[in-house]
Length: 379
Ligand code: ZN
Image 1: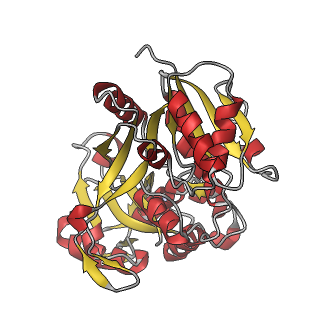
Image 2: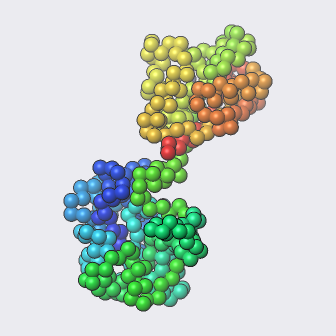
Image 3: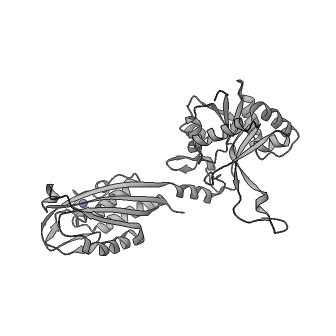
């Protein structure tokens, strides 16, 4: 790759179809903003030397983005339309670039590899412009006549797109001057008779247009958390584990009800949501937590994640004890967990193992649980 490649991200749109006070490119997605996620592969790319981001004059959000001070990034003023934003950015560049990659700010699901793929497409096909496309899978109708048309004759156009910079710049200026609507750069190049080529893109390369697009992308991201808890035994007539009363010759030493399985799962939930651990919310120094029903801890954790629009996808836990034998109670514990966690039994993994007679667990003096919880965005 010896060519000089510039990237332009038009991000001046106000997104009328997106019902929110925050422009869609600044909405939260997977621990960052949409545009931060979009820009990341461009920052990582070894062959893109500059990224121009065109934003509207009144944009107050851009300064807060994590790439704002990156030396590869330059912020330029956008225009009323996407086409004007791209042209403004092209006019800002003094250096000579061979190619320009244009990409929508609200398409955050691309990778650095996609950028290499599109670059290789334009060079190998000797085209003037290359772009990703998506075949149409749904049936389509013509909106005026309501007549079904042959979907094989059509496809959808995505970004990123790559164009020869000089040709794009002069053609775009011409079309804007002629007041011709410009949907994207491939249109500019095709309208001037330049050689355009396409390569199949990914269905996951979603353009966030409506609120539900953002929700769908959030759903694709999952969060995982791990938990561990251990309690010592004392002689007794049984203990609750996963909310199920297991009758045996032991009881649990604990400030609360000592439900080792629910404690471990609670920590997994809090961990997946990056909220800390149960000690922060339910201190064992607090007398009001004495004998606390651990179902309350789980309910608290579920409320916390619901506030974050998250829900449990699945749970996997391993009970570690020498005795009592867990397997005869396994189904009952899963039934109880399903009710407490409000998820189906098919989303609960429960295993049991021993510590091979070694250590405090091996000496029948304690029981421990290790667990994992996977959280997903609620659609
Ligand atoms: Zn505990």
